[in-house]
Image 1 (tube, rainbow, N blue to C red):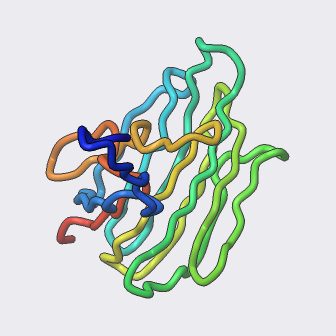
Image 2: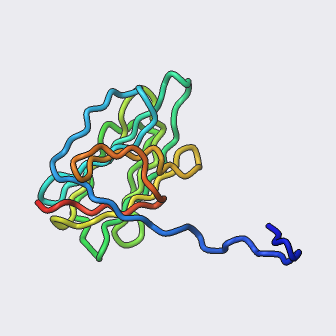
Length: 162
């Protein structure tokens, strides 16, 4: 990028912009048809249980390759992790500290995981779809409304009061 005076402005070297924060409402479940669209769906249950499931738009042919890392914030504990409908080529792994990583080839089904953390703990969600930032494919209910797409990748989700 050049200014009118011919001076060169180096590209921004920060790894990503501001990590935005949003509310996720407790006990608001998403009603989604598998295979009807690409999406990563995040739900929070009172008491500290999160569910993260992925879907793909099978009308576009092929499968979606999801790579999602979720990190409980403020040193909240990762108490348990359970896979949801994973096939042999999908994996849920624990990363450094308290991270959970899902790598899944999602076709006509849902793939995902649930995990238990401290009640009320916020999470950071970093999502890639086919190796590109997938924040526009994140869905959750916050402040009483369905959010379709996150303003940043990663995004921090903070549970509403239980």
